[in-house]
Length: 119
Image 1 (cartoon, helix red, strand yellow):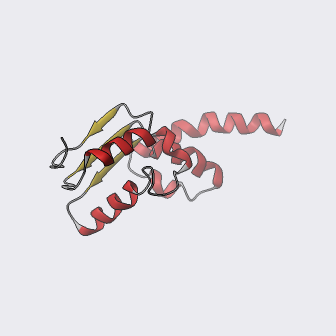
Image 2: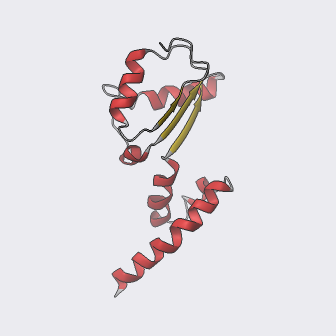
């Protein structure tokens, strides 16, 4: 009987987390419980936007690019990624793009705005 209540909870939790994503307050909700984290992380991994301009943003972008083959371990939720936008990252090579496509096989939208080395 307790297993059934967990499934009902998941059905209720997912719309709440989608609303929090729209409201831009999903990230703090990940700390509520493990269940909220497991449900919320999959939602966060669907769309990622990375900017290369400033030092802090560039560090995030570099950490993300380490996920591609040969760079490091692939996060559990990476298979959920469908939309990726990388802006202002001048050293984005064809090799890195191929690695991104190979690693994140469910991508349906890629945007490399102002990433000059893309060919």
